[in-house]
Image 1 (cartoon, one colour):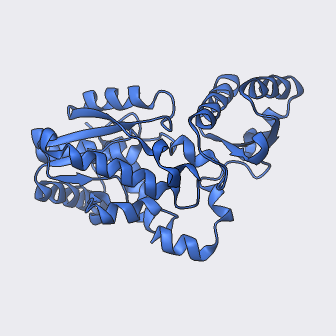
Image 2 (cartoon, one colour):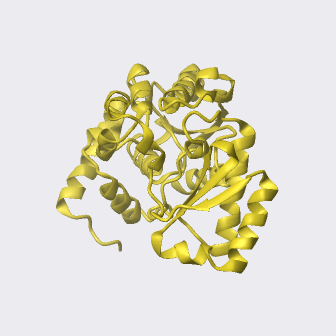
Image 3 (cartoon, helix red, strand yellow):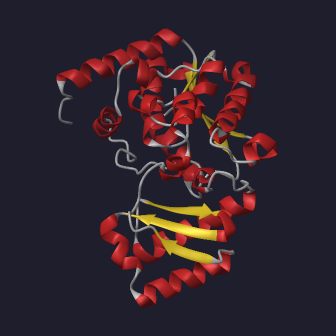
Length: 285
């Protein structure tokens, strides 16, 4: 028997299920991250066959994420539908301004809306939680424009609440590190291309295989420079001469000309540090 939920989280759990039941027939934008997995699990419990998980596939999806989405959907028991999105055909997306995510989410929600009748759904839902309100989230603007609902946010769940609920439900992603799209690793102003995101994906895989790292980022800066972010305590591992040489050789084989290690270590959303504060307020509202 799992440990019962704390009373405050139990109340949020009940509110989450009631909120989803009230939506009726729902399509969950499902990335296989912990947030959308919890929403998919809750939607299946609340709505049964009236819930479907929709996973978008494009060049910006990290390797292995589609397979994990399919596995998680099967474990949950929710219907699962895979679509291909075309954000790389949008010049506004490719130019990689700080509002890039707006165009990606607009493409995602537009594609899901088109097939709602086929899916037997009426409402699109996402995995945004209340902690996302204070971050740089242009995708939330797109969600608002497409009447996408955020049941975690509406039920008052924080990021920690979501992980606790995922663990309670024995979902294997309960401790999965955040896995934003590969395009988020490309420095603002450097054009996003399928070749660059594939380079980042392969570089991150080199680090996972070499050092067994779970949480890391390879930031693709201008002039084909790779900036590696890992937990601060793992930085010395990257600087062992034999390891550094092997990583440098692998990265250069992918097309990086310069390979650097960020001494401040991994910081989620570190690319946003160059975005003016007023832009963060407008785009992340």
